[in-house]
Image 1 (spheres, rainbow, N blue to C red):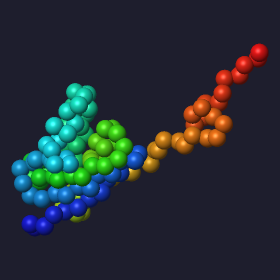
Image 2 (image 1 turned 60 degrees about the horizontal axis):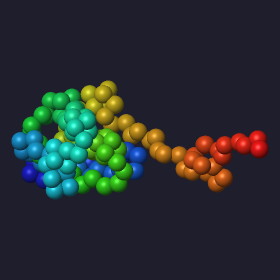
Image 3 (image 1 turned 90 degrees about the vertical axis):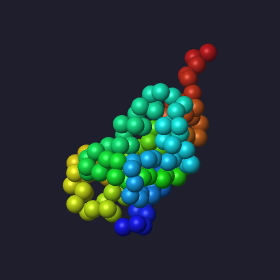
Length: 134
């Protein structure tokens, strides 16, 4: 099993193309270590560490695979969630028996919530102009 296992995760407008290969648990995001990639804000760095390793913890494969991921679009939250979903989908290709555990934790469900578009004549998607009596 020396070939790369592939999974795609999406959230909002973010896309994560994930490639797994047997290794010691390194995660490289857009050519940088994950800790460096999400280092801008300590909150996001901690959230990324918890969320991204969740699929590995659920399936019992922590530190068994190296991850290379191409992240594009969206913001930090969307990219973290897309990465988590991509890893979960790639782990399904390792062993289909992981499906039940991953599904129970909600790691295979695509979060379809998107930003609502701005409507004509409104300030935002639903916020209308303020009424002025005079």
